[in-house]
Image 1 (cartoon, rainbow, N blue to C red):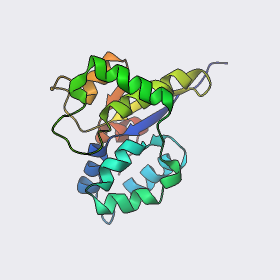
Image 2 (cartoon, rainbow, N blue to C red):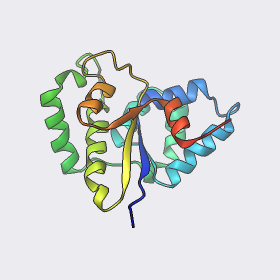
Image 3 (cartoon, helix red, strand yellow):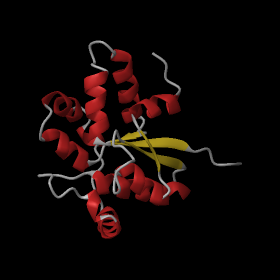
Length: 164
């Protein structure tokens, strides 16, 4: 019997902000219901560093994230070790001009941790970000180097076969 892989999405702050701005809950309730369903199934992962970034500037998203506080994925020692390794290879991933939390290397390291766990839990990690792949050291470029799938919010909708 062959293992059936499920996609597991790791959401960047940029995609959460895009979700709020482009698909407001009062106009697109179905989008939010589907996102919350993915969260409940543990197929949408929001890491602690992304939560910290959101806490610094977006009250509406912060309030929404609080409902799912128990589902926020916290970094492990393995995550921190991978962050250090990633930043050695791609120091530009940690944006020096940015004050406060920087989730980018944590997103990629969590995807690598999930990828390693795939023998126990057959899942395919997909990083979801609105960053452009044009900039060296962007999330999509580093994901490509580590052979991690990467898409944007609209790509997630397509992968899930959602229609609104």
